[in-house]
Length: 169
Ligand code: NI
Image (tube, rainbow, N blue to C red):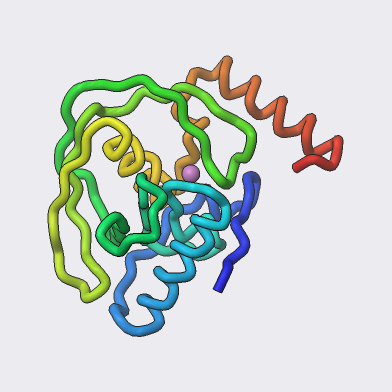
């Protein structure tokens, strides 16, 4: 089932998510819905707060292929190590049409639970490392434009307000 993707300034986007505690059929269905909604929106990552659910859950598929092995599901994830730096452009389905360069670690190691509640670790570099950091930020209520300079953030917020006034947001 397609879920509606909420946009900034919906308050759910800036609130830390609650840990997932039930690893049941309902959770599996929610994850399927999240992949479906992410593909429909042409995204490579989607976090539960983006469909209005304040939960620590995110899905990622960098290859945008609907192949099971490319799908990453992170439940209650945390970053356990960071290395290096990268500075690349990011966008977000909840902040459409806005792109800005964000400074991130080049390589991160993540610890998370799978759909059955089992803990696992995964490493990501470059784009995957950025997706991990961007999506886990969502679970902490942090949107990517909170991580740019005050000057750039003001420009972004002004652009959003302008689109809101024009009825384009
Ligand atoms: Ni995002």
